[in-house]
Image (cartoon, rainbow, N blue to C red; front, side, top):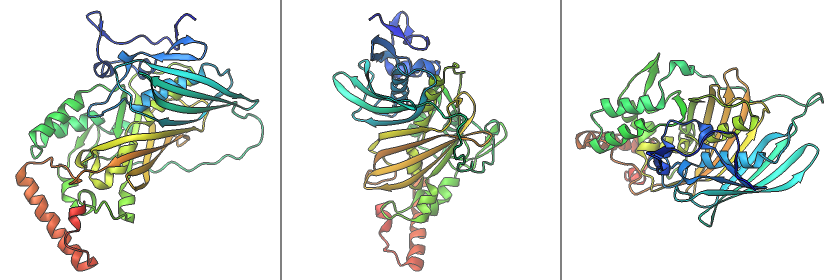
Length: 395
């Protein structure tokens, strides 16, 4: 069968007539839809070109959200209207890279009057990297049914009042002279990486954001050592659970086509941003935690609305339900600005902490001060809670 492209969104990035690497291509100024392109090469076979694949800076494998979005597009191609994706269950079987195309093989499992079910297998270089089950529902109309949902959490700031993720990182890199030069350089490069999604953290990095910029409380995270930087990571507590939360406003930088599948595949892409890092908040956050292994194991999406729009600001309210035995289970509830719960994402990830579990990111003079404060805090805990004095060694 002649090769064709779903949702005509362009091809891989080129430079001087040659394809550039997947890492570089992923940072080109392209839309989310362009990163989710798959070519139909046979009746139930679709291909994502290697030059369009993306490995985030600091990661070892492909961005899972991109693979999920591509697989969902492939699965939806054989499903007629009015059926629309209602749930997606994915396993990341092995790590993908940018050295080969991904082939998605779609199998029709069932075509019922209310639900259609599809199975998708993603292979790269002979290895299975993704297994997906997707269900499509002819959403009910006219019939009586129960309607209620969890309310949207209170959010102090709207996205227009907040700085972008990249702006915050860039300001930390340029203004926080307590950080090691090597880490500041990493942040500087990271803030310059292009991501086709505008991310506005409601509160993160120990920063207080106001208006069109941010008011930096540079050492808030460091001063709050009793709550954020020095928890005993091997002893679960209610306090640690309460810290394992994050909130982001997310929206693609460019518009999304009118196709329902396009919106849901873009939402699938965005749902994999930031979610697993929520589990690291009690351990100082993504940057402070020493993490030799951090990877997504599976990802589930429940689409609660058939006509969800991914090109409008959406609130991603994230929490980690449990982190135990090197596995963390995180949930993201996704709301529209007017409070409608349109999607729920659930992800389990593997998180292995190093020894020591905290990374040294600050200059020695500040580290000495922090160690002294940590010691004072531990001594205080000994008096109140009768904890052993060496508990900090298990951070």
